[in-house]
Length: 426
Image: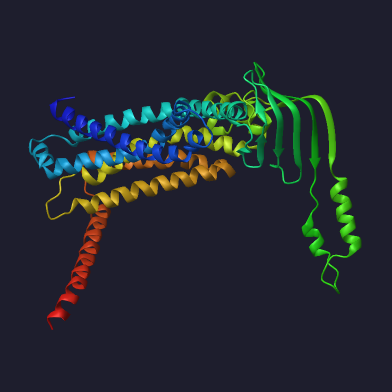
């Protein structure tokens, strides 16, 4: 690259880094605040909190990068035109490629970066986060449950212990599991202990009972009310009470072991519990034929695979779309703000169509060509306009229409502001 190209590249690259950093910081902060209860209510350390929330950063960068590069290129070209630098470059007889080259290189860098994140770093980080959540929830049982307090480690599951020994033995354990509305299981034991080994984390209970109850459906009693008294009959109530108490199963045990992975809903030793976006890319090319999720969710797997390859292309598509609208020199009478608004609107519309194609790919493979065709169409269109230097009549008409609409709105606002003052003077 010559001096002018290096100048444009450094300017656009600096704007891109600053924009992606700020946007990722804002989005990460909103995500981190949702998990702040890990430190405040769940008792986890700030290090675990930062480790878990930072694992979503690769995914945030992958999603935000196309919009960050759009903002960076738009800002750079707008400043070049505002400082009359585009006019000087064109006056020297430089070809359009002189301005386009550094921006295209920036787009290629962003595309390669987005591809590496999409294909490797993002699924790796999300898979690690899934395992991290499993371990943290197990730690909630072993370390966070306080003596004499009822601790809800997730919706429908409550722990209580009377006393904890320094060696980790817990006295008077009470565990209530109501996550399944069709049954309610209560575990109680005199002693309990958390056991960790290479097979996972387990809760061993000694001298206790298990109570499993299937609640009676009281709504059914309301539907079978007596027509004359508008109340359930005595015979019906007796039947309901008998059914309710008859559905309680009580089991006494000397020793009982629970795999804590079933309480977290995730078993790190079983990859079928990982969602498609948490799977490594090579899984999609060589899946386990016995994988339950893969066999029953082929649409989601297909959509995720092609989205990983097509999503990075929007980095280059956004660069070329902005170039098509802003790389040409315009006079001071032609407000570039209107061109920026139209360019951003076109880029956003293209990305929304891409999201729609990704969703449709879940139900039909016919949407897959559109997942690649949409960003490639934006790249080809933007490069053709930028490198040929042609002013497409449709683009100019859109900008003029935007200018006309903006002027009309501005005039109406001035009239509305002038009305109160004129009535006061009268």
